[in-house]
Amino acid sequence: MAESVPGLTSGERRLLTNDLDDLVRDTPATPLAASRLKKILPKIGSEAAGMLKSVLVDVLTEAAKKAIWPK
Image 1 (cartoon, one colour):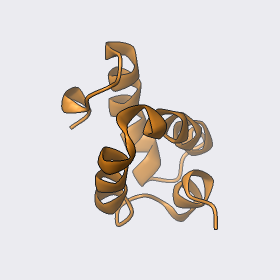
Image 2 (cartoon, rainbow, N blue to C red):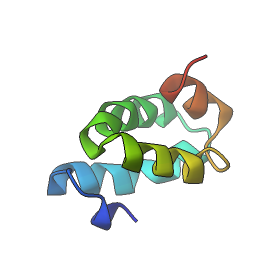
Image 3 (cartoon, rainbow, N blue to C red):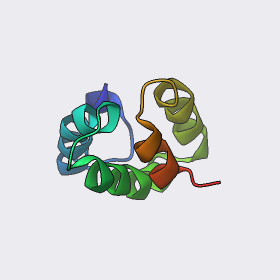
Image 4 (spheres, helix red, strand yellow):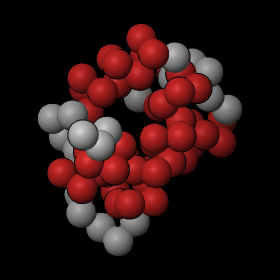
């Protein structure tokens, strides 16, 4: 999935790929993974970020969702 995200460097794509596992399960690395995703979202543009959110919102942990999209 992350291999095709436009606007990201290869390093950011690699981090996103590695972070997905921590975003869908509660692990000690979940807060860091959520923080990285939050920093990456503006780089991919609002439309792509919205699409990514609609896909991820159903699979992310509650802690990750609150860290990325606080209300």
